[in-house]
Every structure is written in structure tokens, then in C-alpha cells.
Amino acid sequence: MYMRHFFRLFSAMAGPRPVVLSGPSGAGKSTLLKNLLKEYEGVFGFSVSHTTRSPRPGEENGKDYHYVTREYMQASIDKGEFIESAVFSGNMYGTSKASVQAVKDKNLICILDIDMQGVRAVKTTDLNPIYISIQPPSMNILEKRLRDRNTESEESLQKRLDAAQVDMEISKEPGIFDIVVVNDNLDDAYGKLKDALIEEIKKVQKNNLS
Ligand SMILES: Nc1nc2c(ncn2[C@@H]2O[C@H](COP(=O)(O)OP(=O)(O)O)[C@@H](O)[C@H]2O)c(=O)[nH]1
Ligand SMILES: Nc1ncnc2c1ncn2[C@@H]1O[C@H](COP(=O)(O)OP(=O)(O)O)[C@@H](O)[C@H]1O
Image (cartoon, rainbow, N blue to C red; front, side, top):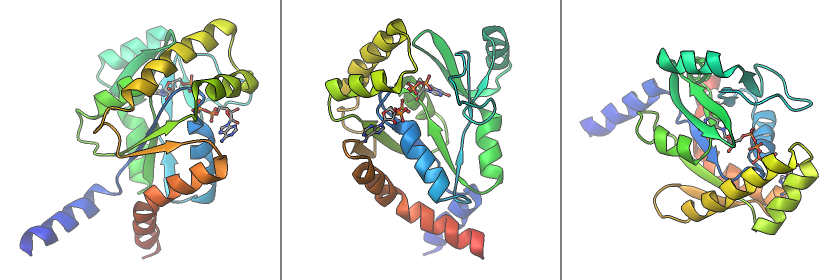
């Protein structure tokens, strides 16, 4: 009884559990998380990563990513400012401590969109997120969606497809993810994602109302 009370108090102090969305490039992570941020404003907050890749048309510095140089990013990593960082498709990506803290300070559920290297690194921290894998229905559909997105050069597209193959294999290993959502029909996938998060969503809504 006493222990249960203690744990409840402890988890309330720690705030809501973060959510990690991972999965191959083109699986639909950004699309799904943008829907969540829109439908549940005041519940979710996005952990804005740093990257050395160039912004795509429509992307905003400080909103989608913090776009930085390699020199700046490496110096910040060396100073210990990052929870994790990785090289993906020739560019550096990383989650700064400040990005996650900014979301936690607002008492929101922090969403991290990170690759498999990031997932492994986060598992060694005390972040304790819910791990969700977003997977495409097939390699062919993934390739079509990535091509239709029209954001990548042929070289970048091939690198993403190679990484996707590895990602899809690793994601089958039991124990890495709490939930796997196959993004075939978007509305169905979004429904499954919401179902997986509804407990945490309700907790935050209740806390932020009281
Ligand atoms: N480890 C890690 N991966 C990240 C981070 N930010 C983004 N990524 C991953 O980097 C990969 C490439 O992201 P991006 O260039 O936006 O391309 P997209 O996935 O094709 O939209 C994706 O798998 C992201 O999940 C980060 O801070 N850390
Ligand atoms: N269920 C779906 N059906 C068809 N197209 C989709 C679906 N989900 C996402 N897309 C499209 O596929 C592309 C890749 O999705 P995106 O969210 O950018 O993936 P990720 O963030 O995982 O790289 C985008 O152009 C997006 O509009």
C-alpha cells in the first residue's frame, strides 16, 4: 500500500512518460505525430532535434529541427549537451537535453522522432519512454511514398531505402518496441496510435485541468 502510494507520487513528480516514434524513413512518423500535435494541443510537445541536413521546403528552423553545422553539433555533443546523437544517411541528428526539458517544463508528453540508433541509446538513459515503431506495409509501398514525397535526391533515397531494410528487420526483434503500428491506411494507423497513448493522454488532460 505504502509502496504503491510512493510510486504514484514519484511518477506524478516525474511527469508524463515520453513517447518515442521510430521506424524507416517514409513510414509516416512525421505525418502521424503532426496529427497528434494538432488534435491534442496542450497534451503533446515535440522534442525538436538538431540536424546537419538542409531544411526541406516548408520546414522551419526551431520547429521541425534546429539546423546546425557539423562543427556546431560536434562541439555541443562534446560539451555533453545531448541525450543521444547518431549519423543517419550521412547527416548528424541528435536529441539535446534542452529540447526534452523544454517539453517537460510545460508538463506535456514529449514525442521523440528518432532512428534505431537513437532508440538503443535512449534505452540506456532514465527517460523511460513508451517505444512505438511505425512500419510501412511493404518495402514497395515505402519506396513509392518516399518517391512521391519528392524530398530526396536519388542518392539520399537509396540510402534511406537501405537503412529501411535494416530497420524493418531489427523491429521484428521482440522486446525493442512496446507497440508496432503498420501504417497502411492512415486513419487506421492514427487510430491505433491514439489507442496506444490514450491512458497517458487522459492523465495529462486531467492534470492540466485540475
Ligand atoms: N537518433 C536520432 N535520430 C533522429 C533524430 N531526429 C531525427 N532522427 C531520425 O533521422 C532519420 C531521418 O530523418 P529526416 O531527415 O527528417 O528524414 P525522414 O525520416 O525521411 O523524414 C529518421 O529516422 C528520424 O527518425 C535524433 O535526434 N536522433
Ligand atoms: N497511410 C499513408 N498512406 C499514403 N501515404 C502516406 C501515408 N502515411 C504517410 N504518407 C505519405 O508518405 C510520405 C512519408 O511520410 P512521412 O510522414 O514524411 O514519413 P517519415 O516521417 O516516417 O519519414 C509523405 O509524403 C506522407 O504524406
